[in-house]
Length: 118
Image 1 (cartoon, helix red, strand yellow):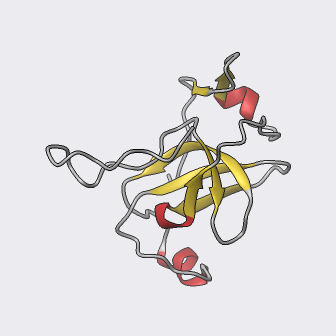
Image 2 (cartoon, helix red, strand yellow):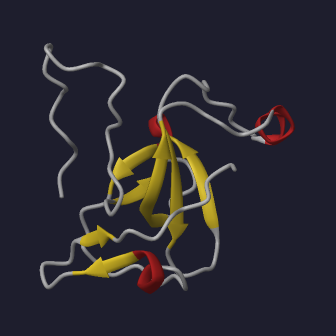
């Protein structure tokens, strides 16, 4: 999957760049993952945000990402992610519970709720 086209002028500019099921790579830390869900802005509490080393702006989409090769789930700012075009499968214990993987390598999000920052 290539990086998405620019958002047309007639659509709101606060639409997220990535969607659940899309494979991404973290620009700084290099890990790959699959997006489970997103928030239109950072919903983490101040204590968590203050501990974030990079502290990207809260006013952008933030994504819940299942990290490949681990059981970790990260909360990453849009500016720190890029589309991953490798199409290699994601090895994470929650992928089977939250996604249906199709023959073309696309992860399709199922109806199972993601708790987010509840």
